[in-house]
Each structure stands twice: as C-alpha cells, then as structure tokens.
Length: 320
Image (cartoon, rainbow, N blue to C red):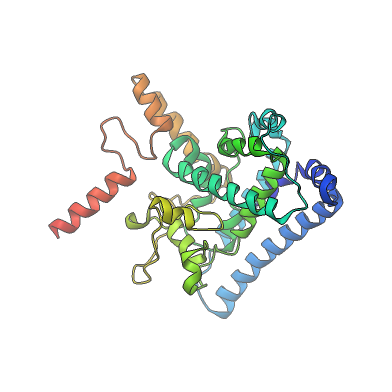
C-alpha cells in the first residue's frame, strides 16, 4: 500500500523542504508507522472477527496478502522516469509554480489526483492490459483490511500510472504526485471492511466501506462501479456510482474465483492468461482485443465481459 512512495522519499523531502520543511527521516518514520498500523489493524480485525465475533476469517488469505505486499517491495528499484513517463519533462515546462506551504495548493493537488485516480481506476477495470495488474487487488475471496495491501507488482512496468503524468504539467513534481497518490491509497485502507455499516450522508460524498464493498463485488449488478479513491463525486458525475443493497449478499473475488494461495500464481495469473490468448490470436485485431479490450473479450463477441454477463443475467431473469 505505502511501498510505492518509499523510494522517492528523499526527493519528496527535498521538494517539500524548499517550501516548508519536512525531512526524509520524518517521512521514513511515517512510512514505518503506516506499515505497522496497517498490518497490526488487519491482524486485530482477524482476531476480533474470528475469536470474539465467531465469524469465519480467511487467515491464510490474509497471510497471502501480506506476502504479496512484501514482494511488492522488490519493485522499489524502478525509477519514477519509468513509473511516470515524461513527467519530469512536463514538470520542467510547467504552467504554474505552486507554493507548497499554501493549503490551496494541497487542495488543488488533492482534487486533481482524485480526478486522475478515478480514470486510472476505471481504465484498470476496463482495459485488460491494466486489469492484469489491478486484478491482484481484487483476488481475495473474503473482504477484509488485509485486502487493502494486496496490490499487483507489475504496474510500474505496464505504465499503469501514466494517467498521472499530465499532473506534472500543472506544476506538481513527480515526487509530490507520487506522494499524493500514496496518501489517496492510504485513505482507502479503512474502507476494506465488511463490518462497518453505511454511514448516512457521507455515502453521497466519500468513498466508504459500503461503496467500496460494491466495487469489490463480483455480482453482475455490481461490476465496474465506484471507482473513486477518497470521493465518489466523479462516480456520480460520470454515472458509475452504485449504492450497496444489503438485501443482496455480496460475492467477492474475481468473476471466476482464484482459489490458489500461491502469491506468484495470484500476481501473474492474469498475465499468463493473456499470453495464452495471444498464442491463439490469428489477426492484429485479435491481438489488440486480447491486450486492450475489456477483460473477458473474445473474437466472437461472446466472451464473459461485463456487458455480456449482464445481458445473460437479464435474459435469465426474463425467462424465469
């Protein structure tokens, strides 16, 4: 979860220090606190749910999430020039010079990153190339706090973050963009909880546990919804907001669940499937579809895409 910003802490500190004094050592300490609190909270949740509330808790899945989070640290060597291609050049030709001491600067950065996050997240569900990385986060078949730090390893290599690159042109350094993105992810830790109820009027503005449960659901009626990071404002604006219906039990995980507890299998399964499909491709169109079509795309148009699954569900209900 926070691993993405471990590498650039020195650069972030230098950038922020010029405008108001946060050093690298402080950022390292914050990072360590975040890790301890996140893992500790997930373990505490498991203890309370399994031993106190007497609810089934997937301890093995939780440990797999921790292993995947640890393995993700192996990608820390990837430079920002690859993770955010062209961002440094755009920053050198920026439109605005911001004062990082001003709260208006950080509010602007928050809103811009939130907007970029919405589209980054939406594309990560709708384009198979990007889904191959993001699917790791959706692989747990039980929804709990440990799922928050089950993140894919290949995002930096597959240019997943390139939608954040234009923010540099607006005057924010690549290091500050990564920091803001990491804080956005940090907010999302607590919403990976099944036991937190709906939160009244907050549901209309913020990404809450209820809204995010819908996002993680594999129920046909819930697929491809609620992409916001901190807010659901852009989901409402662009028509992707779906409220939780507590009368409908939620199924978590992939539409075709993965039952393996092998971290490497979970991390690379989607890429393995892409390679298998590409070997069957017979035209440029099929290659493009397998790489950049929606997950489930097939040349005959009958694959298990979200649209086809919904049509089948509607037809089934109509014949019932």
